[in-house]
Each structure stands twice: as structure tokens, then as C-alpha cells.
Length: 375
Ligand code: NAI
Ligand code: MG
Image (tube, rainbow, N blue to C red):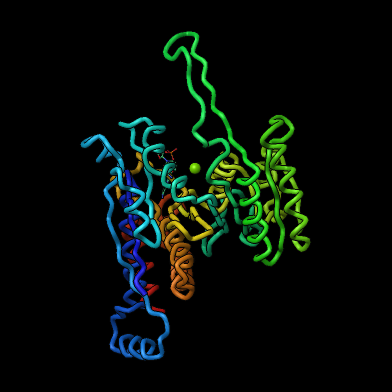
């Protein structure tokens, strides 16, 4: 099976970690896929083919949609961008944002329209402490932290509605309107309950700020309790977002699956990533659960201009995101192999500086490729 992947490396370390991810995916394809490199591998593949078992190949399309390109030609994506993306089975994304372009321009010209137009209404962010990594918080043990954050990805605080009057005067007034629809909340709640149900602890915590925000957040609460009736096997509880930050740090073992709005989950997942070792390791999947559009996979971090060009970015978040993509594409074994390879490498202490190690991007990437080849 050929999986067509649209690659958008974007800006800063986005380009560095995407290159590393493609190298790892290519190794995975060579080792487990159609282009198996060893004689035995090829024989095995032919046998598999004869038995009509799945073999796979990645076909990458490189899309130069970045801030650098925007500064040169005046646009991020061409007018037919959505049609181009829909010709693919998945989208792999690095990061967007560069100091020469205001961040609201870069985000609203690239990543946010893709999430919206491709109906990727779920942003799934698993967090756990990988082998060989320690949380920067001494109280947080490996076995205590194993969460999945389900982020609403299509509306809420990032709906883009609002405006500014009397701009650039002392009387400027701006509105930033959050949109919460019954339909939008229901679909994310169903996804969150199903996620909780698929995990051993079957536990779902819903986060809002419905004491102070009295419309949209109250509707969230209401829909949550209504949908909960359809999932009697899931244990539920409800948190206000401010108290949730404290609970994540002090009582991580009390949490499992977490569902929150676009903004709240964005913030909580950076905290989750930090608690699990570094923002450089956390993955995310922007999913269209109906599979009518390609889903998009990206590490949660940004373009990190402070370390860009130095070759020291941690590629683990990019690899983990690639593993999530491979799993979404139905290649379970390849996804498991990649995750095992990543954890063998972190366990062996081959780590970048953000994790207290001394390796660079290239060193970690080559180590992960070697581990894949060992399988
Ligand atoms: P950031 O995630 O780029 O960086 C935050 C800090 O973490 C920096 O000190 C950086 O060096 C470090 N860091 C991030 N990823 C790392 C990695 N893989 N390895 C080692 N260290 C890593 O967030 P920041 O600085 O707030 O934003 C920088 C730019 O990225 C902005 O233009 C922002 O808008 C954009 N951004 C884009 C996102 C996306 O494309 N989805 C997400 C978040 C930010
Ligand atoms: Mg973020």
C-alpha cells in the first residue's frame, strides 16, 4: 500500500525535525515495508505479497509553504491548497512562525486554515514519560503520568471572530469572540469518551472555566453530562482550568484522559509536555475522525527561533508524531516498531540538551534509525 504524505516543514526547527522524521520514516519503510533492504527482508516481502498481506511505502510530497517563502512571494499557500492536500492520505507538519512575520499572520495563513478546512476537529495529545527520561518535577514518577489530552480543534477561543475599532488610537477596543456550538461540543465529547473507553482506566476529566465564563463553558458542562449518559463505563470528573494546572503538577496519577477547549488544552498540553521531560518530545494529531479529509501530524512545539539552525532541536516529538501518523494510516506494526526504537534510544541516554543529554538532532536521528534496523 502506498501512503501519500504531504510534508510541510514550515519554519525554523520545523524544517530540521521534518527532515529527521522523513529519514526515520524512510528507514522504517526500508526495514518493514516494500523496499526491505536485506535479502531475507525481500524474500519475506515477496512471501507477504504472495499471501496478500500488507506491505507499505511512503510517497512524500514536499510543500514549501513557509514564512520564508511568504516573505519572498507574498503568500503561504496557493489558491488550490485544499485540493492539493486532499490528494494525500496524511499531512506531516513541522512548525510555523518566524520573527519577521507577526505570529497571527503566519498561523492564520497556514496551520489554522488547514485544521479548519480539513475538518480536523480533534487535536489528540498523548503524554507519558518515555523510558530513560525523568520529569523535571521530582514528585512526578514515570508510572504516575500517562495521559491523553483531547483538544477541541475547530472552534472555541480560536474561532478567529472579532475585530478592532479605533485601531491605533488611544480608544482602541478589540473583541475576541469564542464560538461554542452544541454540534461542535457533542462531537469532541463523543471522541473523548471513546478515547477514555479504549484505555485501561476508563477515566475522563473535563476542563472548563464555567464559573467565570457563563455561556460557552456552561454549554460545555451541560453537553458533557448529557453525552456521559451514553458511556456508563467511563468514570468522569470535572475541573476548572486553573485548579487543573495544580492537579497536573501535584497529583498526576489521578488523571488519565482529559478533554478541554482549544485554548485551555493548548496551554495544558504544554504543561503536560514539560512535566514529561521537555516540550521537544510531545506529539499531536489533528484528526478528521470521519476520514473524509487527510489528518495532520505535528510535534506540539513551535519553530524555536532561539535554537534554529544549530542542529540541536530534539527530534523525538517529531518521531512520536510520525508514529501516530503511521498508526492512523493503519500500519500498527510499523508504529510500534518506531515507538520501541525511540524508547530504546532515550533509555540508552542518547538525548538532546533539553533532556539533559549532549547529542544533537543528527545523533538522535541516526540512533533511532539504527534501532529500527535491529528489529
Ligand atoms: P517554541 O515551542 O517554538 O519554543 C519554546 C521553547 O522551547 C524555546 O526555548 C525552544 O528553544 C524550546 N523548544 C521547542 N521545541 C524544541 C525542541 N524540539 N528541542 C529543543 N528545544 C525546543 O514556542 P515559542 O518560542 O513560543 O514560539 C516560537 C514560534 O513558533 C512563534 O512564531 C510561534 O507562533 C510558533 N509556534 C508554532 C506552532 C505550530 O506551528 N504549531 C506551535 C507553537 C508556536
Ligand atoms: Mg501550543
